[in-house]
Image (tube, rainbow, N blue to C red; front, side, top):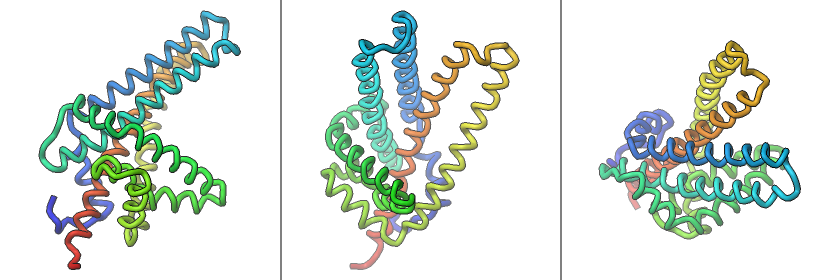
Length: 244
């Protein structure tokens, strides 16, 4: 990436198609299929046992942990895959997943800490939570790309976002609106089909909702990883271009 490329919302979205390649699609589909399989298995077991029960809670926790672990792998893999495409050396999805596996424990610590900080901030009149989300938005790319530790990643994100936080907030808002439109574009036709086929209000509706939710979650996860990677590299290039 050229050091003259400045960080702007428009440039991030113009670079997004470049970093979302075949491996990103593979990550999206595979995570969506995995999450759907886990959810359908859980629903099937609940129906066999007659519904949620105290004995079924350990199994529900196991399913949740399985999907959460897969989420960690895929998010890190999406960042690694996007960075490789940005540098002109794309990798296969399996290679990106291995990179995600190598950063699992640091990512787990980082995501847990960020979830607590952002949730606490949102409870404190929302604004502090938004500020934390913006200030630490580059922590995951720092963790994966620089292979930094948890607190070093947080520190790097805090430093790199200075002077760009309003743009990052604007980018997040644009991304939120786009995601909302994509979700509406998927859910509304799906609801119409269910209504026309007479499946609305049946078990079929719940199953379709599960599948749609899993694939939309996978889509948001992969694209969010790519966006944060592009932001990270553009701001890094900006900082490198500034004379010491």
